[in-house]
Length: 289
Image 1 (cartoon, helix red, strand yellow):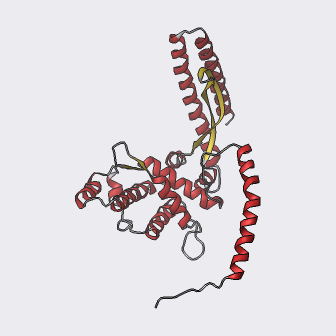
Image 2 (cartoon, one colour; image 1 turned 180 degrees about the horizontal axis):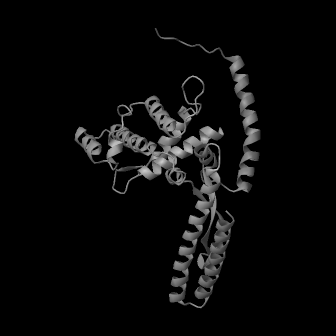
Image 3 (cartoon, one colour; image 1 turned 60 degrees about the vertical axis):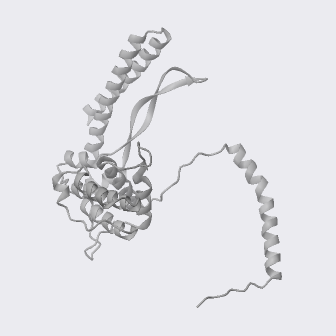
């Protein structure tokens, strides 16, 4: 491990050096030098990422349950770069020390010489989700049959039996549980996995599964590599007992503080008014039989 740490350090030094060369070339307006430095920078970042991956995999492989350790860790940090701007103008590159890279669970299992047959179940599950999406979009039987016949997956995945196309979130939950069981199973003493999927996991999966397609009025579903990442997300949530979060564009802290101060007194007044009006009125509820 000492050697790999040395290699990682050397690659980092190269990254720093190439960033400096690129920035210098940009100031000199030397396009050829800048292009060469940028390519060498990308090569150094790739080499760094590969060495870092080897280090992380090596550490995780020593765990009592390597797969569980990898699921719990989920991701690690690598060194990269980003564009630096001033007033909208690119002035160079700057180093990024905390770029997040998610663990590739298939590559990790291959590294540890562990079974990876579960990947075929993930591929089959992906096709079933795609068919479910097609049904929700009210696509024709001919279009759905085409998806069945042409969906990109391995021959071994086509032979996997996971049940029919899910017609409900409950059905998806059961199939997702099958996938989790295939990857990480710990008996609860009753023959079932201690790692249980719930409706929040299904909601997260479905929300991340599709996006707007390239063609007008089309929807793009997840590729096999992406569904594998989503499954790891779900398993990470289950193993660590974390909660899902929501990202959105936020207003400034100053504006949020102002809105909060403006609305609080009004909210109290409205609450008081509502409570007074309710005391004066008798609400009648009619139940239809």
